[in-house]
Image 1: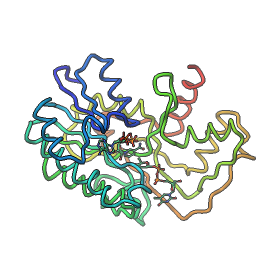
Image 2 (image 1 turned 180 degrees about the vertical axis):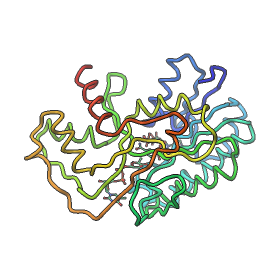
Image 3 (image 1 turned 30 degrees about the vertical axis):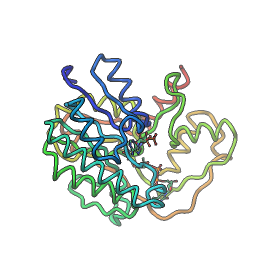
Length: 286
Ligand SMILES: NC(=O)C1=CN([C@@H]2O[C@H](COP(=O)(O)OP(=O)(O)OC[C@H]3O[C@@H](n4cnc5c(N)ncnc54)[C@H](OP(=O)(O)O)[C@@H]3O)[C@@H](O)[C@H]2O)C=CC1
Ligand SMILES: Cc1cn([C@H]2C[C@H](O)[C@@H](COP(=O)(O)OP(=O)(O)O[C@H]3O[C@@H](C)C(=O)[C@@H](O)[C@H]3O)O2)c(=O)[nH]c1=O
């Protein structure tokens, strides 16, 4: 990472943003990571003033409404936060010659009927409002900011640490909790998507400036179902998978992303099982 940057990370208290801010602060970089109170991105004047005052040179735009259900229930707000605010940030980046990293999602493919893994050339067909807003935002970023990377993430997870004891719900942590508490966990044999460990995501973000601007599928590949992954996690932890795991009947949901394009730029993600085993080991050793 170029040490002369003034880095802005929006949504500073978020799961990924708070970890990224700490990572860069510890590396001695100049980092601004305003939470919603310090920079409410639904206020376009506030965005413009923030850029005027702080002159960021590299912006990781992570703030957003990230709950699929929340977006479905409050579509006006979802559009305001995920699309309109992203558009303002893209315009501000252009006005201040800042580079922008925008975080999109594999859910832009939630309505595609053909099987994954999808490439960056596949036409996305979102069928959730969350996915729709993210795809609209991608278009706005491409339109307004020529110096932008659009990264489609896939199911990012992390485990609690001393510094970050709270994690968003995720398949690994949810399985650990279910195993410890001996509660049943259900998972579909028809759901396929990559799982990306947050530390690996961040270490790849360090190299973002080495790759050309554009859209990238930025996450782990995974060719086994959510059921198989859950079973794998429970067995890795020596929990009783036969009794704890139930099959959830659900239609096919294939959100797998191909990461060939990013691999071509020298950044490769571990497959999901390998990363999960490493996370479990690190968690047990802390
Ligand atoms: N985690 C994942 O698996 C994936 C994440 N992404 C995207 O990556 C980004 C970060 O995800 P993640 O860290 O998991 O999500 P989080 O929900 O943890 O973080 C999003 C942050 O955005 C903040 N925010 C919401 N509205 C506003 C606002 N009006 N002004 C300022 N901040 C606001 C939230 O603040 P508050 O805490 O106050 O609510 C929250 O801290 C999101 O854009 C998400 O869509 C994409 C694909 C996968
Ligand atoms: C939308 C949807 C959800 N579900 C189920 C799966 C899961 O148990 C639950 C919630 O799934 P979701 O995919 O909506 O949400 P979630 O599992 O929390 O994951 C998402 O996190 C955010 C931040 C992202 O950006 C996404 O990329 C995605 O990884 O609903 C389906 O079975 N089919 C569907 O079409």
